[in-house]
Image (cartoon, rainbow, N blue to C red; front, side, top):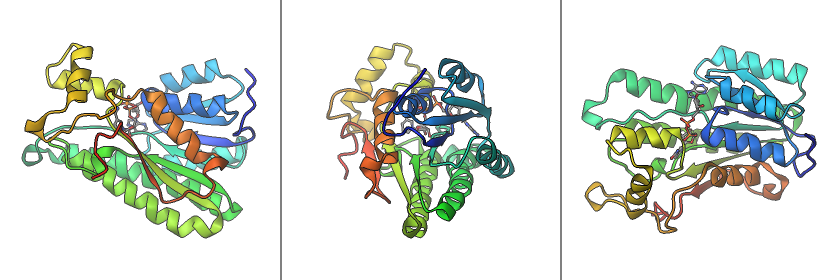
Amino acid sequence: MSTEGELTGRLALVTGAGRGIGEAVVRALVERGACVLATDLMPQGAERLAERYADHVTARPLDVTDATAVEALVAEAEDTLGPLDIAVNVAGILRSSPAVDLADEDWAATFAVNTDGVFHVSRAAARRMAERGSGSIVTVASNAAGIPRAGMSAYAASKAAAVMFTKCLGLEVAARGVRCNTVSPGSTRTEMQRAMWAASGEDDEAAAVRRVVEGDPAAYRTGIPLGRIAEPADIAEAVAFLVSDRARHITLHDLYVDGGATLRA
Ligand SMILES: NC(=O)c1ccc[n+]([C@@H]2O[C@H](COP(=O)([O-])OP(=O)(O)OC[C@H]3O[C@@H](n4cnc5c(N)ncnc54)[C@H](O)[C@@H]3O)[C@@H](O)[C@H]2O)c1
């Protein structure tokens, strides 16, 4: 497959690339001409993308909680594929529980992936980008980082930490030509969302989407003013914009892609 576009000649690292939003990000970057190192804890999905986009996608297993593995993979990628221009943190997990019942293991696992993972990957990428004087990093966080949500305390706190880390990093490397932004999705149709629906006993997807769109005053959930949940491609579009030169004057920004769900209050 040959693609020419605004990202032609760029190399991107994407974590959590095997399915859902990460997979959509890989597709969006490749469609714009980028070459992508698609990584995931479970590599099958990334390997399927590498088969589909043979000239543009390289798949590698990567656990973002493992700082040594992250550093080794970024070093290997720069040796074999070239300098990294773009890094997109998409890997994430959700463990729902009332805060007072939250297990230590769930809290630690959530922060290990959603916060430590963002730190490991962004640090390895930003150091090299800053030395070269250019690069762009996007962290996919969540609108739950900006508004309290019942049953999601660990997840929301881990995402808020990832957002602020990405902004502080962006401040430090701005003068060296590296932009750091976050994209904060609302409810998006992926396996993570389906697992939440299943856990609440909802097996009819259309009914579950309706409930999300309508909101739930008893749980202080506003619903979605635009009247739909996001598809993974909606989030990928925002990421693709932020890593492109069209966003060359945008850094430290947190772009909500949630159909208005948080009212940006
Ligand atoms: N789906 C939503 O409604 C929604 C809303 C807001 C934010 N997000 C965020 O968007 C991102 C993608 O979510 P999704 O819905 O596509 O989820 P998903 O569960 O469908 O996909 C997440 C991917 O991350 C990978 N992953 C998990 N742990 C990892 C680790 N330690 N190292 C590397 N990869 C790992 C998984 O294997 C999986 O392929 C996540 O950070 C999530 O928190 C999702």
